[in-house]
Amino acid sequence: MIKAVFFDMDGTLVAYPEGIIPLSARKAIEKLREKGILICLATGRHRVELESLDFLGTVSFDAVASLNGQYCYTPKAELFSNTIAAQDLRAFLDYQNKQIVPCVISEKNRMYCNVVSEGFSQAMAGISTALPEVGTMAGLEKRDVLQFCAYCNENVAEDLDKAMPSAKVVRWNPDFVDIIPQSGGKTNGIAKILQHFNITWQEVIAFGDGQNDIDMLKAAEISVAMGNADPKLKEHAAYITADANKDGIALGLQHFGLC
Image (cartoon, rainbow, N blue to C red):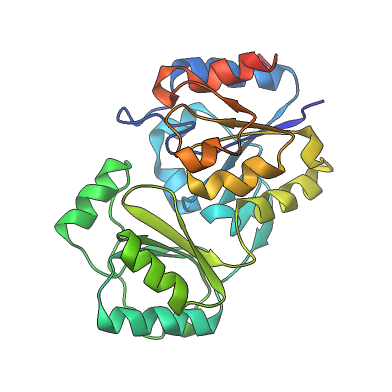
């Protein structure tokens, strides 16, 4: 019996290029609530971002695994946080001294970027995200950093992965990769949420579209990839639904008799 649904956000629950939660998805979520199923979000975005996005006001969440599971919370309580090791923060700074990689740095209560470029600004606008303030990188190795969201190609992503031994680099968008601890990930954060609600993975259905959703889909009892999902993610899905902007959420839930 399914007791909780976990949605990735961008490209899954939120359809692009429209940048909205489709009406069909909102109606389907209402039906899930009527059945007592928990509505949860598993996203790479920061809590600060989520609270500023007007279109998310149409849907409320019983729990959120933000920053790819690095910071998890309910409307009433903080459940979990996981920071990047100091050695990896130093390695990131060393790499920046060789080649500037535009990125968003996320701490628990703030997010900021290291530099602004035209390509970086356009890519951020493409995911309906305003550029945060520019912050200093000085003393970064002493901060509690939860995630880097780096604007880079595959070669740079591979270099960063090699340079940061206790971290992992996961691509979720053609333009961006997220950098988090090896011990991190959506699955780890979701596990903390499930523990809080006394729910098992056998009672979970998960929807995703990016490579950072692979572990989540592998762990869930029912796994659904969006039609617009990365081909690597589709390999791990029990069912491939329609694109996010073609009623994919509603059709996926209907396929499994949940709405």
